[in-house]
Image (cartoon, rainbow, N blue to C red; front, side, top):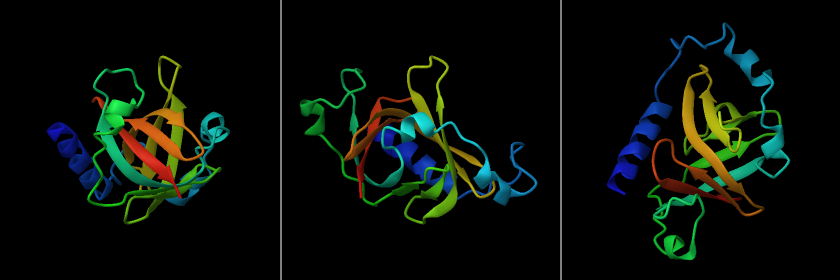
Length: 154
């Protein structure tokens, strides 16, 4: 779990970086908000909306589900990350409510979708793999680890 805290701190610091030198940056960052995304399939299942970070757990048995024994070990964050995901692929992210856009694209395996947030300068911030979306919760597997982030719908 100590590695999870390290990755979370790295993610937060990456969100505050100016990635305007990124080669994917468009000449007009404002035009990126109208870019077509592939979030429709997940959006139909309820991804669009306002979310607040409820906490994280370690998926001890690697089944990509939050079991009752694992839920008992939910670590609540010392801050309340926020996500607002709009149906057109735009939104807000984090406590600072950083404007930008998001994409939910199928992974290479095609089984799950991967959520990436792009800041105003079109700098990517990898959020993780979307595991489950319900009317009340969103479960995202952290990139390259065994942690699951739990977001509650506002």
